[in-house]
Amino acid sequence: MEKKREIVWYINLTSLWLFILILLAVLFGYDGMHQADVWVKTHMPHWHIVWLTPWVERLTHMNGFLGAGLFGLLVTGVLVWRKWYREIGFFWVVTLGSVGLFIALKKSIGRVRPDAQLLEVGSYAFPSGHTTMATAMAFALYFMFAPRLSSALKTVLWMGALLWALLIGSSRLYLGVHWLSDVLGGFVLGVWWVTLVRLIYPPFPAKG
Image (cartoon, rainbow, N blue to C red; front, side):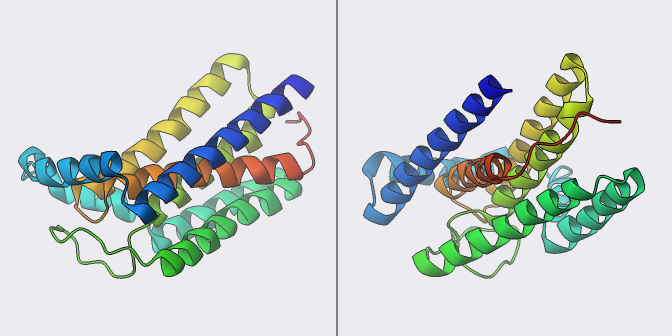
């Protein structure tokens, strides 16, 4: 147990360090990050596929406020049914906390979104709220269910959480509503927040 906790601490501190680096690059216009942002924005339209675009839009909406809210209610229903009441608090602290974090950061930083967008969206760009929330919620599920699973299923669940976060982040880039640094910042912010809450929160018992 102590070794697992050390790993979570390491991930938490690493993600915080990476977020600070990305944030400084955004605030002070680090040339390398700026070039990467511009390169992705310039080349992404060449990768658009007509039949794929509506599906990407549906995918990205699955982790918008409405989609995430409905999913959160579904997860809560399952947890109530299983009588995992401690996990309900954990899940909503992670979810609502991630929303508060990215909203506060967006308003504080005030970064403008890319001008070429396939969706009309408001608010500011950094960090990507969809990516932050998707990452935090997906790995919250991992932390809640992992104690009840075999090693093989833990790996599958971890890979599924990572894949979901990457898919949502990629959808934001595909639709042109975020810079690359917005998505990277949202991902590491989500990782930092969910691991922080996991470290503070009491351990989950390995029960059925």
